Image (tube, rainbow, N blue to C red; front, side):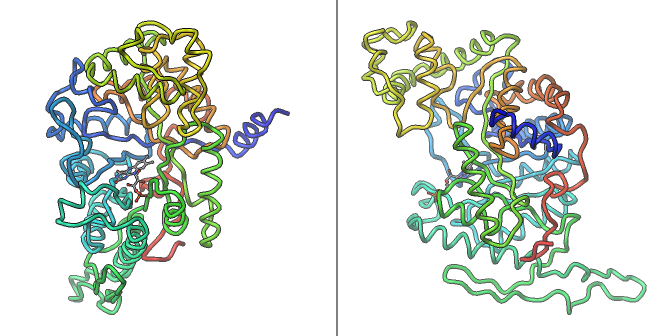
Length: 455
Ligand SMILES: Cc1cc2nc3c(=O)[nH]c(=O)nc-3n(C[C@H](O)[C@H](O)[C@H](O)COP(=O)(O)O)c2cc1C
């Protein structure tokens, strides 16, 4: 039997379902020019309803969670582009929490630029308010531009990861510092809480210290779910030690599988069950009734960012080992045969094989770019079936436990995915039809945890 078929059988037998996270990108969508597309509110950045509406649609589509990526600061030029991050992810999630009932609420908060007490407090409060739906994406944050907002130098990588370990350990200890059955709230007897069960944590590390306790009781899922994203070997250790969810950005099935296996192995190494860590592969899409329609949508997005084309053409050239320049080639035409015969997939960039494949098919340079070959995640521009086929292939090959899907344009991309792709996935038995429970831990099928102890 073909290896892929073996995997298919294995997964079908286990009746596993993929999980879906909706990644929200400052209200507009993955593409920087999404804000200019018809239908999009150009000021969606400050319109909290846009988060709420998208989250409600995702909840109708039974998404396990929404995820708001974040870094503390501005790292791009706003003269043509929107900010990459929301005004404040926690406040956006708070608004969403009040308007939804099931969907998980996950945001990034930096371990380098926040005190663990503040992190513990904000996330546990969100978890209690949302009845057990909060998740914290603990990232170290790279970029001096962000450090400068705190009047600081960016600590070196080793230090950032040491800080992250300390931060998470303190956060978890603080979460557990209000004992699970400490809150008696006995109005008749006059005891509000059992103070023997609400105790300081008294932790002192190299970078952070906290006495505690954190005066917040457990939520329905105990405490927030920890996520982790990126970060090479150090990130892997962090994930294996604490995370229940990992955001990853592989470009092909083989490297995704390898990464998932490494994450699972890292969990074993830290005496945790590998099934308690779910890997979400980043995935971008543009949906149309036909592939041509989906591509046209992306061509329009590119037209709104015309000034970026020369740079993108050069970048594509580097991916193919060719000196491409928009001054010397017609981007409406395929790469000239004489050049193309010398093209190869640059091994430095894992996205290169896809670019080469499309170039060899004879697509115009503009259309190769429109397919999103230099996007942060793999892109499918096509029909709902094509999108579903991609997700099915990766999932059944054991490449991931689910996907962090990033719509090109939030305005209609989320609804299209929910109305057109989700039913196909459900019909194929790949995605659940109902929430399994009420909390994010239940949606993800990961263990209950309180304090530093997984149960
Ligand atoms: C899918 C995905 C989402 C990520 N989200 C964030 C984020 O919201 N904020 C952030 O600072 N880093 C995020 N990262 C992690 C960064 O890519 C990077 O690994 C991190 O900033 C740490 O960098 P360092 O390992 O060099 O310290 C994400 C990574 C991936 C793969």
